[in-house]
Structure formats: C-alpha cells, structure tokens
Amino acid sequence: MPVELVPGVYWVGAIDWTIRDFHGYSTEDGSTYNAYLIVDDKITLIDTVKEGFVGEMMHRVSEVVDPEKISYIISNHVEMDHSGSLTEVAARVKPEKIFCSPQGKAGLTRHFKVDLPLVEVKTGSELSLGRYNLTFLETPMLHWPDSMMTYLKEEQLLFSSDGFGAHYASSARFDDDLPGHPEEYGYQLKKYYANILMPFGPLVTKLLKQVAELGLTFKIIAPDHGLIYRKDPGAVLEAYRKWGAGEVAAKALVIYDTMWHSTEMMAQALVQGLTDAGVEAQLHRLRRTHYSDIVAELLDAGLFFLGSPTLNNGLFPSVGEFITYLKGLKPRNKTAAAFGSFGWSGQAVGLITDELKAMGLNVPHDGLRIKYIPDPGELDQLRAVGNQLAREHLLKK
Ligand code: FEO
Image (cartoon, rainbow, N blue to C red; front, side, top):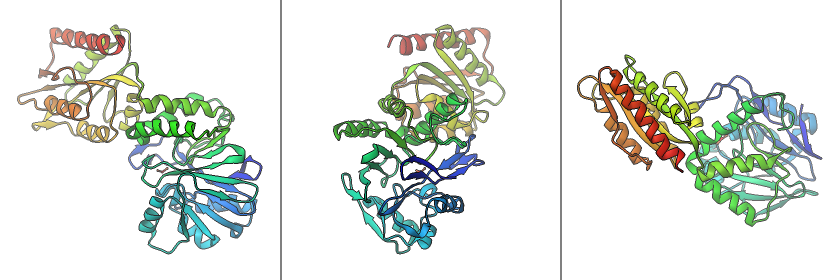
C-alpha cells in the first residue's frame, strides 16, 4: 500500500528485504528504495527505484493515481538504485519533464543514452505543482556530483535523496512506527553514513550551514533509503552534525587478521591495555567482521590499531583490502598505530604505518612488531602501549 506523509504526498517506493550486499557494503537488514508521489495539478514522482523493483513501485503509484497522469519526474540522484528504472517508468508514463541537476543531466544521459525530457534545475530553482511548490538544493558530492535534494515548502518536507538514509527493510515507514528496534535502526543509520558519506564530512557540515543560512526548517525528512523522519527530524540532523564534524569518543578499535594466532595474541593484549585504561575497546578480526561494519564502529572512535602478519613480504590480503577501503573513506581525527608478528622479513607493519600516515592520521610511532610468537613480557609491553595511547590520545582530550 502507498503511505501518505502529508495530504497528497505518498511513499510509493519498494522494499528490498533480501539484499545482503550493496556494492560490497553488507546490508544484513536489507534496504528500501523510497520514491514519493505528489498528487497536485502536476502529478509528480520523486525518484524511481532500482531496476527489478519497478513493478512494486508502479503498483503503489496505481493505487493512488493512474501512472499515465504523472506529469513530472524529479531525479534527485543518478545512481542506479534510484534511477535504474527511470527509462522504464518514463516509457510508460511519458512525463512532460524530468527535472535533475546539471550533473544529473550529464550522468543520466551517459547512463541511458536515450532521449529523455531532462530539464536542469539548480540550487534555488523553484517549481510550482499547483498548491504545492518545490525548491531544489544541489548537494554535489553528497555523495555523487549530481546529487540534489528537493524541498516542499508548504509542508517543510525535505526529500533528501541518499542523505539521512539507512539500509533497513521494514514494514515501518516512519521513525515513530518502528516497533522495538530503535537501536538497530540507529546502527544502520550510522553504518550508512560511515560507508557512504564519511569522505564528505566537510561537505555535510557546509550543507547544514547552508540550510541554516537559507532558513530552511524541516518537519519531515524523507530519504531514499530507510525510515521517514517525522517524530524527530532534529535527531538525525544532530547525528549528521556530529559525524560531519568528525567528533570522536573515548573509544578504540583493534582491527587485525592473523595466520597462526600470534598477531591475534598481540591484538588481545592491546585490547586489554585499552580496557584497563577505562575506554571502550572493541576487537575486530577481518574475515570475521565485515569491513563495512568495522568502519561503522570506527566512525566515532578516536584511536585504532591495525594489525597484520607478514605474508610473502607483504600485507595479509584481508588487511590490504581493508586499507584500500578505509583510505577511500578519508577517516579524520584519529590516532592510529600498526602491529603484527612476522617470521623473517616483517614488512607488514611498516607498510601499514606508511598507509596510516598517508591517510593523514596521527601516527605516534612506527608500529609494534614481534618475531614469531609473543612471550609474556612482550604481551605486557603491548598492554602498556594500549594503555598509554588510550590515556594520551583519548582521555586527555
Ligand atoms: Fe542510494 Fe547513491 O544511491
């Protein structure tokens, strides 16, 4: 069934209950592709859905209006989870116009290579639908160059595209009707930010400032994934303010992989030292915890250790994969250090240290290396290092 947000505005999206991998990001709770229908003099569809879900969306649309009565489509974002069915929808609906940002026009043209009635809009462009009026807000690199948001003035309703989204399949559509799982949703909201928006934190801060300067207020925030915020849109704005600013807590992660458990022994000793210092400590073994979950936990951690054994003079493959993923996310405001055991050459710790420095992190020493198996004295030293870094870099701030 379609769900009415405010008079004449409906959620008509699709629920992807079974997706478990979203271009490499684990989606254990599934996702939604939210699309919205505004019934006014000009009937308008805001965003479409991923290819394969168009039947579900069009069924919901047809429960409200005849789809062929849709005059306008607004494409807030080119990425195929929102535009993958655009040509199919356009072929059926034959819209007068499809509104998108200038970069959206370039991106949609390049993706589809078919003639669509694309009309460019920019920040501040306005569109009257009848009783309702829309204003567009370009949000380049949040998280693609084409990204934009659409604001329905009369209801103070922001269609926020990927912004404020979460991969979360549920029968609930609103933040006030999520039965019994607010923590689970909060985790998915944070995981989404960490994996999709973390590299663009300064742009998030700039957007929130721009919104304040424009005097925009939101009674409802309707993203393209997850729940619609109508009970407390301020809560998600505040979460984005903190994450955009790169605020961190007295929290440390020890992330590692291991061949014969020596690097694992080092990891456990570091966790003990962190715990003894009184900070929140987490241990994550790569290949056991998905890297997209690790970066969700890393988002607000002020300190982390990254460990790898040396394999064939290099990094353990899962550690190399994690570094590749992490550096693309441009983590900020963190202290980091490398560790690892080795048999004879021991390059892994140096390689990790170089990568951590290249990410612009605070790297207070050149890493902790132990030959073959750590002895009790060496484990004591590792505990002491964990304890010391927690006190110096988490508790003194
Ligand atoms: Fe949900 Fe950037 O697509």
